[in-house]
Length: 273
Image (cartoon, rainbow, N blue to C red; front, side):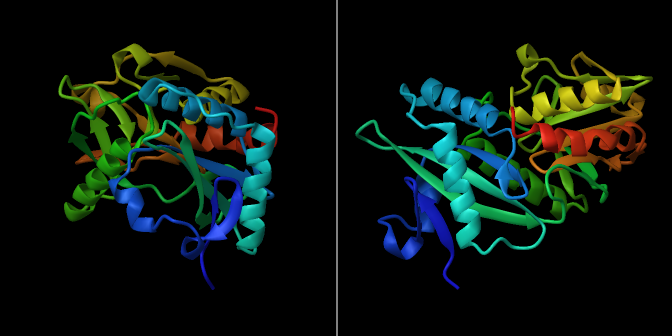
């Protein structure tokens, strides 16, 4: 069956648009990955706000996209993809044109075993990768490509996850997803002014901690402090994951299981945020 895409609001196929999948490789774009619950997009307004703000910051214009029309577009795309079993995510690409307009592309990204946000029980072994990226406050083709290269590096060295640090030794993320550490009874995360990226996933983790009655403190996570952290957690577009180890340093699975109790609530709340 031919893969369905949504291009500028219309569900179609690659064959019927003047753009091929390979075009994305050479384009600049802003993106966001949107999880769904019962095939309705979660935290769509928040994700769209961040994507449009990034587009404005990088390209000087803010496309006129309504949440309701985008929600309908996502539901249609999933429908014509015949609603695969399991949870579903879509990725929205906002692609600038020479004329100053914006192309809007939606791809049915993955099927995963969670409907809404889930607790990702497979714990990856991580390795620290140090690299800088331009426009690091935004989800872009550069950030995503860099994350994929870092993940490939990790896999080639016997690990499953690349934990990103900058040259100053600050731990920033796991790929394009926010990173959190446990020390004692407090969850720590690198502040935005130290290089962390604002995102809907970061906000979701803050809400998840609030539901569990756990305190999150913004404190710079440092490479040299990895062995002092009891746990490292990542909030991804589909849920919460605890890192098994960093190099030879074994990490616990302590608060991830506690926080996971609020994931169903977070999924239900996602329609209103």
